[in-house]
Image (cartoon, rainbow, N blue to C red; front, side, top):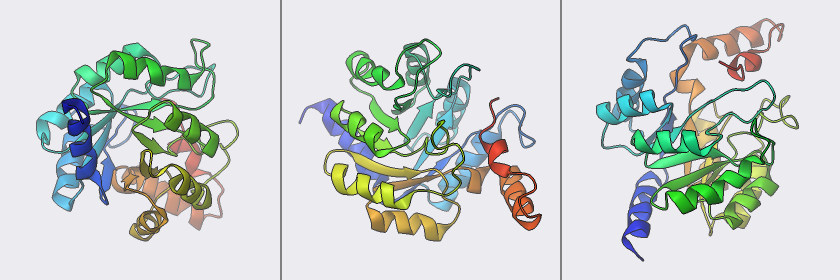
Amino acid sequence: MNEIEMNKKRILDSLKGGLIVSCQVQKDDPIYTDDIVAIMAKAAKWGGAVGLRANSPEQIRLIRETVPDLPVIGLYKVWHDDTDVFITPTMKEVREVWQAGAQIIALDCTSQITHEKTVAWDLLPQVKKEIPEAIIFADVSNYEEAKHAVENGADIIGPTLYGYTAQTKDIELPDLREFARMCRDFGDKAFMVMEGHIYSPEDAVKCLYLGADAVVVGSAITRPHLTTKRFVDLMSGYQDNWREAERAKH
């Protein structure tokens, strides 16, 4: 095992069995302040999180400065009206995420077509070639995309985009059966992370029993306005679907 592989293994081993907290905020969120992600990151570390997930070079740098001893999964959300691909869609965003200090780079590894008219998952081998030191987190929406990501060398697989593609956009709950199938078939080839639609500690524990190596939780911990909206929507008989707010382009 060379030095690069040893470093990757060290980082992944540090995440094993733990909670990764997604510390993200958009400027139109009601909780936005310039330092809110740093506060989120400090709170996550205090609570025992083993890693963090962050969006945009600016917020990645702030989190790395504030909590330098926790691994950061970095991504860069870029929205376009002609595609649902928005997570680190091109090499430009990949380079910026890496230069900002993220040890792990999250990519859209679905079969969707990007704004640039490429297939999203085609970016994965390009990143591995240009930045071999990076740990690649493949955000997928189904089993087939997970299989493709594993075959193309992704280090981490997570169903992050389940609910964010045209085929899954009306789905509200995690597909634990499909995730368990991914863990069973790919768990010896990649680090399996459950991300998306996890709203309670009990659900996170279920995912560990199903084969998850770690669990990412975001909105339920760091976005109180969405947690509030979820309660209100349920209590009012779903007159207004909170998921539309969570999936909104910014």
